[in-house]
Length: 242
Ligand code: PCA
Image 1 (cartoon, helix red, strand yellow):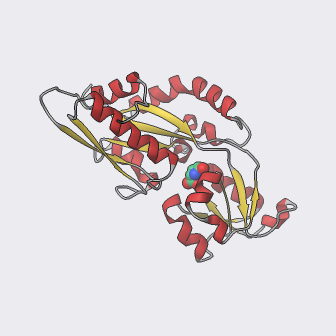
Image 2: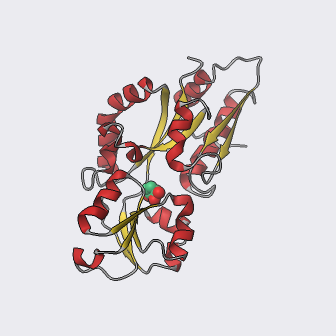
Image 3: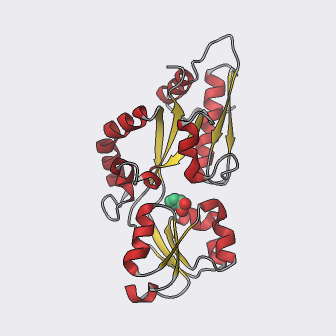
């Protein structure tokens, strides 16, 4: 038997977005950006199982892992534009659209799970309004683990990072590259393993989780647990059906 994991409010929100009708069967494609074994993707599979159960098998959600449907930074636009009924969005990627999206990518503003939750509670009303204006409904949100620095060589001062090929996944991580004099390379997680193996990336900031997913330990030996911020993944669905 499948363990029930998501709150009934989240499951009800999904059913409501789907404009769920007891007689019709509905299928949703959910665009996800990380590997199937990543905990964010496992959460999404659990959501799909909970919704399947709560709808008596009438709403089927297929989770497309590892950016197989849309690239990580294209998922928001796909949900907004109606190409995908639902998807996961890394808020900090969209800082240039609105500073509300960038809040949890600000280094050391909220650097623990407790502070991250406090920031989320403060941010949520504005976030929901903003997503609503863009035609989306916030379903739930989960932080990535705290962000640290991976580096090919030992870092004793900022000068050690000068000129290094620095992978950026968001405007804030690109800004850090600029401030430390590194060479920014924008690469999403799904392409990171290859970029590390081919030397396109020599250093980056992310979580232990992404380091593990991308086998960063095979090419990079230094990890600095700076616990700088905890960027949130939000699951959004289209407003359609409300
Ligand atoms: N992993 C994602 C975003 C933050 C994280 O921990 C990534 O590196 O793309």
